[in-house]
Length: 370
Image 1 (cartoon, helix red, strand yellow):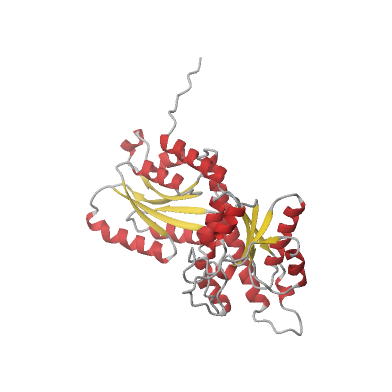
Image 2: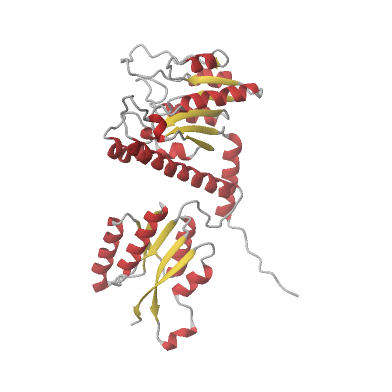
C-alpha cells in the first residue's frame, strides 16, 4: 500500500487566496479601450460598448466625456444618461484647458451598473475630491460599479519617455501603469497606421512613428494580460510559475564568466520583450571576491537587470523561493565542476534543476571547485 505525504497548507497562501477572492467579489470590473495614438476612435468604441450594454438591459450612465461634437457621439448621448460634472469650488482657478471633475458622490448615489468615463488620465481642478480622474474611478470601482473607460498610450506615465523619443512630444496629463494593469479587460483600438496618415492630409506623425507606437501599446497590453493571469492564480490558489512574458533570473557569483550569463540573458530578454532579474545570495564575507561581485552586479544593472541581494545559508532554497515569488520562467545558473568526493551530495545547481518545477534552467560551466 502506498503512503502519500501530507503537506500542511501554507497559511500565508491561504490568506492571500481569501483576500483575492473577497476583493474580486466586491469590486466593479474595469474595461479600458486603449489607443496607441490620437484619432484611432477609442472614445467611439467606448460609447458603442455603452450602447450595447444598454440594449442588453444594463443600467448605464456617462460619468465623463470629451465633447468633440461628432454626430456619432451626440446620437449616443441622446440614449445614455449623463451624470453632470461636479461644480468647481468657488476658490478654484479654472483655465480653459482644465477638465471638469466627475461627480463621484452623485454617481455613487445613482448606483448604476456601468459608468462610462472618457479621458481617464485627466487631472481634476484644484479643490476637487481627488487630484486625478483615475482616482475617482478607483472609488467608483470600489463601490461595485463597472467602469468602461478610454485612454491613449501617451498618457501612461511609465511609457511617456519612450513615447517622447518616438514623437518628440510629451503630454502633461498621465495615469500610472498600475492603474492600467488592474484592468479586467483591455481592448487595443488597432487601426492600421496607414489609415491615420492619409495622402494629401497633414499628419503630425509618420507611418513609422505610428508603427512604433503600436508595438509599444501591444507590450503594455501584454503586461495587462500578465496581471490578469496573476490575479486568476491568486484567486484560485495556483502557485505554478506561469507567466505570459519571459522573466529571466540570472544567479550571480563573483566568478569571471558571470558576464557570459548576463549577456546571454540580456539577449534573450530583448528577443522576447521580457524582463531580466539578477540575484546574489550572500552567505558571509567574500573577501577578495567582493570587488568581482560588485562588478558583475553593476554590469547586470547596465544591461537592464533588476538586481537583488538576498541572505540565506541555503542558496538553492533562497533562489527557488525568490524565483517562484517573482514568477520567473527561466533560470540561468553557474555549475561548478566538483571534486570526486563531493558527489555523495547534491550541488545547489542539481537541486535547482530537480526542484525548479515550471522553470527552464540553463547551466553555465564556471570552473573547478576550490
